[in-house]
Image (tube, rainbow, N blue to C red; front, side):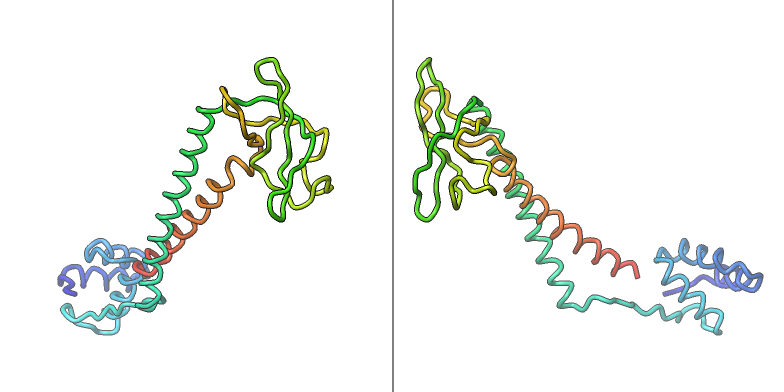
Length: 200
């Protein structure tokens, strides 16, 4: 790294006057390096270094393996963000193609080792019962919102409703939220670490 003689002399003069911060800024602007590298260059000059041989060693806290791992994590993060976006688009499309009505839980039907609530709805002036897409461990449990007699909003097909999807946050946005958080974490945390490592 070459430091022009006038800059080298000016940096030394500023440092001698106790204006090290200005000397570091001068070297940073001239050499187009980070503040840490400019500071080490100034220290080298003050120790008697020459204009053409100021060693500014790279200090990295991420090993090559960790940097590769960070890049892989960022790629995974982009994949999670895409999955979150697709989940969001699917939910928006679902709401365009279905209608929200009120339904009442009237019974439960076994679905493997879980249970599906049965909703009673009024469609075309007639009452009918349709199963829910939701599955719960135990009917009538105090930990579930699906209890007999409970009324809630549900999404159904407008012409021939055969299944009801409860209008709850978990049913609607859980995949968008989970994939979005994973995507942001896997993308921006490694990117910040790599940027910090590069600027040292």
